[in-house]
Length: 68
Image 1 (cartoon, rainbow, N blue to C red):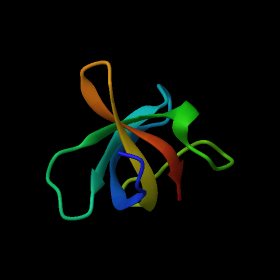
Image 2: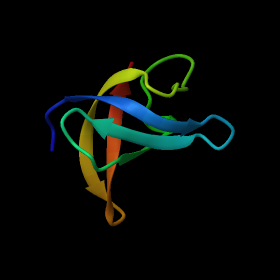
Image 3: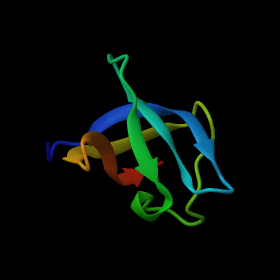
């Protein structure tokens, strides 16, 4: 899916650099890694609103091009 979607951060582990996002209107989470965050610093906060694209990789949906 190349379309940007809006969502929010469900959880993010700053020490390990990964977390989970929830697209608006969805219940399923999307995995996100530090390298896919397009902001400086590359970190997120719980309940923060973000936009991102969703891609299916390694057997799960992952967030790419995440922007706060």
